[in-house]
Image (tube, rainbow over all chains, first blue to last red; front, top):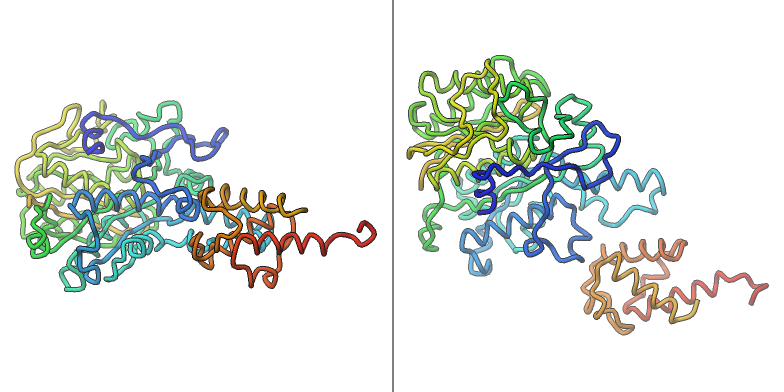
Length: 389
Length: 88
């Protein structure tokens, strides 16, 4: 609930980088997480677990508590699946491995060099530690991974592979090479002297995204399973849309056609019309290109039916493979509370962006459909459509 | 190196680098059963001890190791073997 309160309090999670000494680098700010001690792994376990998995472990613990699953042994664990997406996986460990190898040779590598760096480690960790023996997989579609994982989890349940799925995303990309690599692409904001103001989706003076770490995991469950456990869902995943731009590895298609088509598909699969949409949680990265093209795509998809638009990344930056899952949580929280949090740092809207942006104050939300957009390097577009439970 | 010095260095590695709680580090503690070390933990332990001692530990030296005392004995024996004969 702290995340929910922070969104409405306009509290930014961006700060000067503490994960490593960034003085002298072009980008010296990021969204970093202080994992609360009561959610973190014990020191011995933490020493052999990459931060990417540690974040997912904390999110999983919260998700299980929130879903009223105090004792996993009470579940039929052969029917519980896991799918946690990630953009870069165990990046801290990978970077350390290369550094060690090239400095010390092969003997310096630790035994866990590979498992700590592998991208499926978070999913595997959750399955191993909780004994979930159903399907366990990962998806890696860069910044759409978290949303893609939720679709994958939905499909596991819809196709009868599982009754419950722990689905989400995780990334811990605050490492020298990853941050510098994104900076080299010109994707990152260098507003180093104003961390809280650096992530400014749809603002006229936006200068790029703020890279961030984080994780979100949700408990997806069939209606039948939830009924049998006597729990009430926060929301229903009513539909989704997925497309590829099939255009360019980093640039969105100039017309936003893939993004638009994904939103339309999400509406079709939810058996809904543009007029049913009560909120859009935009991908809203704060890069010049993404926000302009996404705005065009939203207008093209919704037509004259206009819906309030918010952007979680204005508060926490861009958590890459976790973003789609974190934003799904924010979207579900908005649905459940009937309030849409405002976009932070949006004093001066880009005049080219013609959206009904939620600014300054939170806005009441009428019951209906909420979309959560995720678009990624590689041209992956994933749109989730949530409805009240 | 004598037994006491080696034990204190083994303890430091286990506590600081592998995060094993200090109260579980006793000479008779079994690596697998008492310290719950799996095969990867054993390799990480050996790599960390190599860093601590500044030399390579051959896998044949640690294959038979069961307890912390076995580790201490192996390290003491290895350090004795490596000592130049003129100095002994």
